[in-house]
Length: 151
Image 1 (cartoon, rainbow, N blue to C red):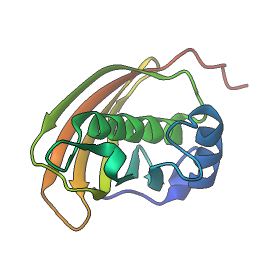
Image 2: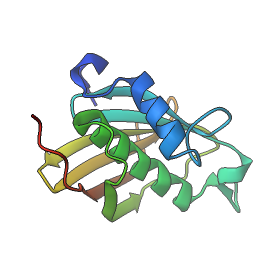
Image 3: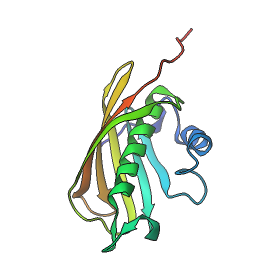
C-alpha cells in the first residue's frame, strides 16, 4: 500500500512509540514484538516479530496473534491521524485467514477507509516478509471518544 511520508501524520513514529510505550506497554517497548515501520496520512505499517510465543500447533503464527497485529495497525493509523487518544477502542473486527504464515517478520499494512467524528473504519492486509500474497485480510471499526474542541 502506498503511504505518504510520516510528516503527513498528526504524530511521528517517535511520538507514537513514546505514547504507546506508556499506554500500551503489553505490545510496545523494549523487547516487545510489535514495531511501527511507517505511519502516513490515514495509514500505518506494523511489524510483528513472530516467535515461539506466537505459534499454534503445526508451527504457524496463531490467529489471535494476527488479529492483535491487525487491531494494533488500525489503532496506530488512527492515532497517527487524530493524535494521542488513548480511549479510542475497537468496536468490531472481522478477519479472513488466507494462508498459514511461518514464524518471523509479519507485516500489517493498515489504511483508514473512513474517518468520522465518532467512528473510524480500517482495512488491513497482513503478509509475511518477502511474500506478496496476503496471509490475512481484516476490517476493523474503532469508536472515537469525544475530543476537546480545538481553540
